Image (cartoon, rainbow, N blue to C red; front, side, top):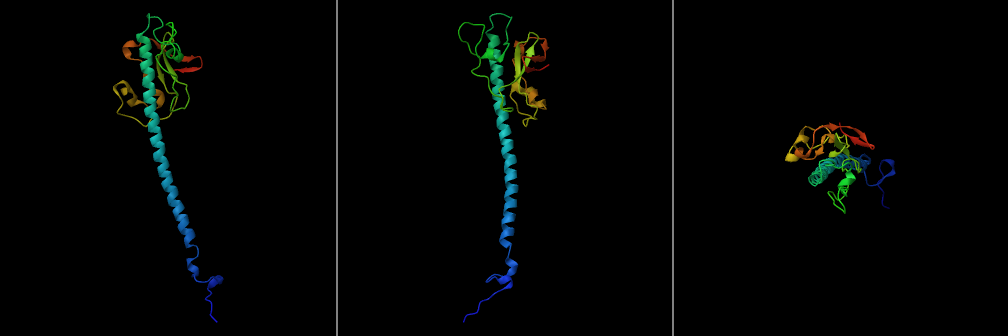
Length: 183
């Protein structure tokens, strides 16, 4: 008869000291994958934030262009700037439909279609800004129109203001119609 080789604990063919080696290898693999996924998550979050910033710059400049366009076509000095963002969608000063903006964009940073409004003494909108208090990643290399953003410490400092020669003096602040208005 053939004899069977039995080692400690009744196991055949494997030395006892090898028990648990596969378990340790799997645990080490899981730990390494966890660290790698954390690093990828950080890079992904930064890339997403940069993409949102680029979108905010585009949208803010669309608002700036629309406010300037609204002011250029003012029939008189009174009511030169919009009283509400919706006035950019359908200009109430003209019969028929005259659009300066196709839609009220969603703020890519906050995810809401709510914007801070920068108003003059007459309560007319001369600029918009994000309501996010987050710190921007982008600190330099802005376009000429956005150069003042280089000193910004939060997104609310990124004010997309109408061109300065169109903006009258005497800016005020407060809360108008539940909308955040910068002082």
